[in-house]
Image (cartoon, rainbow, N blue to C red; front, side):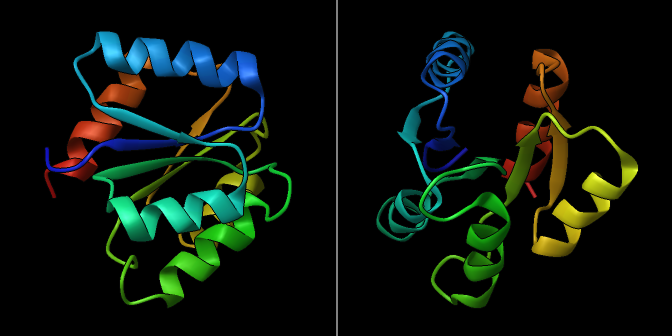
Length: 122
């Protein structure tokens, strides 16, 4: 896997817990607290995969994903939506916004790692 994982989560407890678990799994991790920080880090750090909370301040995850897909510098970076919204319509909305995959909160960590590996190696 080239590049770190970018974890975008505004809830500090969720961010810290996922950050620790990803590091324990042997992954390099950088974090952002809002959608604008996420876009800036995607451009500067070129992460292997982005884990994007969809309910974010400044710029929400839906908008950040749409903007990422319009920017030639970062449009290739895989994005996994992380959201507490578990309805099928929410999944479709995330994929339509430009996410490559979707994971609900609370996170099924082994399944999330499989998604990260699959997208990072594609």
